[in-house]
Length: 110
Image (cartoon, rainbow, N blue to C red; front, side, top):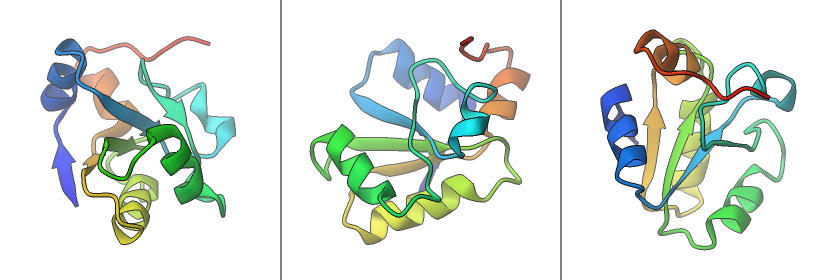
């Protein structure tokens, strides 16, 4: 599993790279941890991999997963599930929503 820094994620967004940014937390936490441009697919759900594949369209698409903060294990777990399912470009934004905010970026508002 490869990891991304806040700066790398910011640059990917600024370059309008084609990637899927997935918040892996349960739906009830999404509104408080939504990085702009992200979608919510909880890794705790049984159909997580299928839902990601449906959104991505192909297992070769770049996927970035994140959760609340660095100590949260939801995104590393999600990345592992996706890699085991055959996704080839999986990245974990380890700093998560907390790190995004600490870097001066804003979260999406509902």
